[in-house]
Amino acid sequence: MISSSQLEAVRIALGSILAHKLRSFLTLIGIIVGVASVVVVGAGISGLNRYVVERVSRVLGANHFMIARMASSDRLSDEEWERRDRRNKRLELRDYDWIRARCGECEEVGAQASTSLDLRHDGQELIRTQITGVTASMAVIEDKTIALGRFILPHEVDRPAFVCVLGWDVKERFFPAVDPIGKTLDIAGLPMRIVGVEAARGSMFGQSFDKLVYIPLTTWGRMFGRRHSIQIHGLARGREQLADTIEDARLHMRNRHRLRYRDDDDFGLVNVDEVTGDVDQFTGSIAMVVTPITLISLVVGGIVVMNIMLVSVTERTFEIGLRKALGARRREILVQFLIESALLCALGGVLGLLVSAALAGVIGATTPIPMQITTGYIVLALLVSGSVGVLAGIYPAWRASKLDPVTALTKA
Image (cartoon, rainbow, N blue to C red; front, side):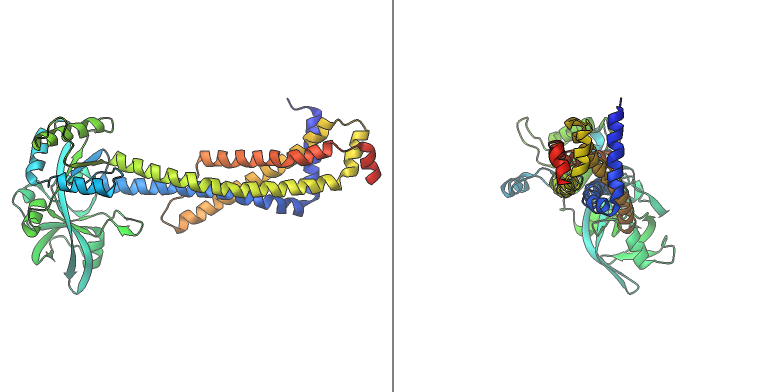
């Protein structure tokens, strides 16, 4: 319950702040900038995390894992990487067939391999286009969205057929105003009939996910050679089953390669959860470095508040002496100036939140990274600004409470 003396202290503090509006506003600028910096930086870090995770999930799909010759997400030394490069075996279509036939936990199993080519069509060129050989099941595993036509069918992989599915960038470069379905596109000197166009998946950090062409994996092998290692992709039935599904596929691959119990895997394993976990770790590391730096601006703002409060104590020496002469206790004087300092910083915190919301809106509207203001950073900024306000007011309040009333009235 707030006492009448505390309410009176709040009233006096508000009166002092409003009596010097310009000075109070200039004092608040440091707190406003500090709070806005913390919240905007936090929104940027959270938005970056969300942006990367969404892009990764859009490309890889959910509940998805991959087995490849070198696909470890571990932090490896150069020596360890070279050792694995010598040890790990090339993955072949027979490995894919083995896993597909035996992985009972897998909802789907697919495979793909990629290379890059410069494509040309009707005088247009698209350099370093990714040509990806896939099985038909990759449409389900990576949750692909087909904007026009269809994806590659199983019998087109079995044949193999000379058909292709275009990424959106390829369609826009070579067939900008026409429906490309049924037309042909030369790839490595061979005419490929276009059967579909994948919907745009966007880009990340300037790297487009739509600059590619899908062809049947068996066709890809005939065109570019079968000695290239493929990637084997699997889909779990749900997030809860993902770990068991990965372990099932891993054990079958070890059996396929006749590895003994003590032997290390001679292949790499990656799943979407590991990738998003790496993203969380990366953005968390950024937050650990950047957030304390932005909090320094709040400390600077607190120093400004302390300076102004000391000036206020000097200006109001007569008022303090008069109140003490009329019976005000040291504790009441102390509380009065602490409340005034805390109110200044609280007001600066609220204005800082409004500024940060406006800045986040502008940044989100002008950049591809969504700004996500989180409760955690808001609470952090307000707690620090409030603490700074109290700490900045302690010395001026103590100094005011120590004034001798006779001396104070004499100085006035």
